[in-house]
Image (cartoon, rainbow, N blue to C red; front, side, top):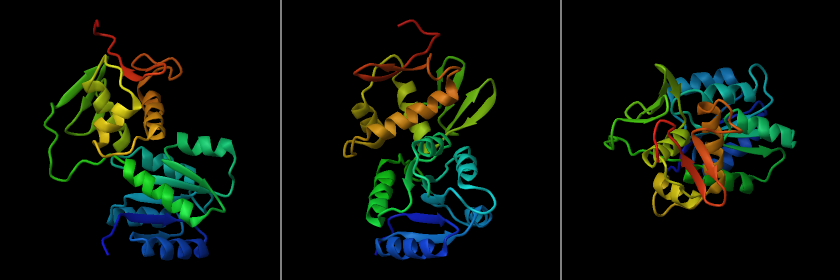
Length: 239
């Protein structure tokens, strides 16, 4: 069987770890399991994981702290946050901290599988060994997007970006001044055969605004064009 992706389950409940490992391995995934953040850190020094299923409440460092720490790193795995508290405030907190998706316990494993598959489909990927030759730097305002290093620079300060943030920002800065719909952004990021995922685009826009805008509720650079989509504005350019 071809391995679909490599997953890491981080949860202090041994029964849940065992259940998920059995189920997801049967579905074609390579699955490792650990009980807490310390064990997770060790695993991450030995292997790369496409996606981490992360419990919120754990002994030691909790899932929210782990999520924020991982999200701040370059090339971080996708994160599915699990919690026993399904409140809307917890969902918002998890997503703001960097989780790519969120599910409340108890959950149906078939629904979890569908979420995992959707997350992996919409994740932008750069083929190994294929250099990005479409320029080296893209600029807007006082920001410089370094395509080779896949990071954002501001006043000589390096800002690490996730796969999704980098891919969306690259497309928008390549098309500065042009309004792009969610469908166009999905096509430019993931290709012609990809499914349009407005939630993915909106989530990355939200995160980019937190990184580049002084006031994300009143953006200068990454603006919404009502009913049409998004546009990147360079204040130093006259259109």
